[in-house]
Length: 394
Image 1 (cartoon, rainbow, N blue to C red):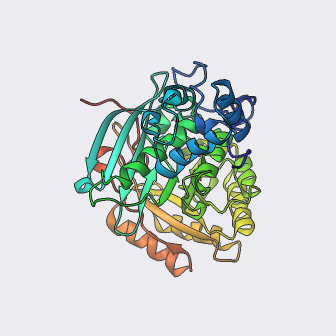
Image 2 (spheres, one colour; image 1 turned 60 degrees about the vertical axis):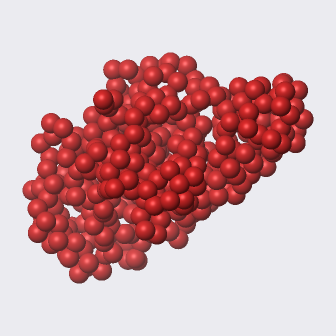
Image 3 (tube, rainbow, N blue to C red; image 1 turned 90 degrees about the vertical axis):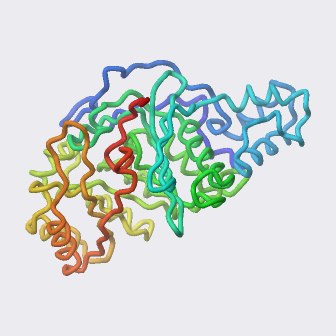
């Protein structure tokens, strides 16, 4: 097993404050609950291989037991050590307590699309709330996961952005969302019968690049083959960002062929300054340059996410400028995902008219840009893009 897959407990957790967050033009928007509440319980998914072996030794288990635990966790999605028949009965409780503390606890589950879309509200060790959304399609099943409690990016049209940033999530808290969903698919707990979780998108709560270390650890565990990971191809993992340029460049250097998604939402700095506050720190030119460099380094086309807002960024002039900005680089490097804006409570921002959506798409396609209108699954349960607010409901 690879010793460098996970976070080391000797490393201090990143703060989540983006580069320039303590000085310069942009600072993370912090929630009223932002505070150091202590670290989440240390989980198997947070430990390096050496740390797992050391922990096993502390409770009197030999080295080979660690691989057995990894097979159960990554290969079978199991954490109930009392049911591990290949494990000594007298040590099962110790193993469960040492390696598999509960990190996420289901609070509520909402179902849409005849059971094919499931949004789950999770409570973390400190009472924080996060959400994940499982979406089953005819040819794939995608899980949208959270990487932070809240979000500090402050985009005014996004429910999560209005929460502010409470804290980063640990690698274990991120990975557990995946394990639970993979187990549910395997066990046939999702409409359509038994199946396989095939795609992961870091498009839930939080800015993944603001929690880079934990996100990267989670990506490695998601994509490694059992018993080192869940065996979901890195090519089926998407990491999104509003444009944290240092994070994009770090990810490009990792050599992991995940897809990068950039939430652009506007083709000019003047408009993007209003819609995406991070643009005041890293402007559209810096973001697009970094995204194109990511394409050159990985040979993976970059997804350009673009929430269409009525009368704000959805006019023909915006589509033409977006096409010009993308075609500036001279190769077929980007795929644009226009997203009909999902309404959030109390927002002045509204979805584009259907005819404006069609015109926007056609202008991009006429300019040689590949573009696909994003599906808005889960809108009726506030589970679509930009709607995750982690509210408890009756």
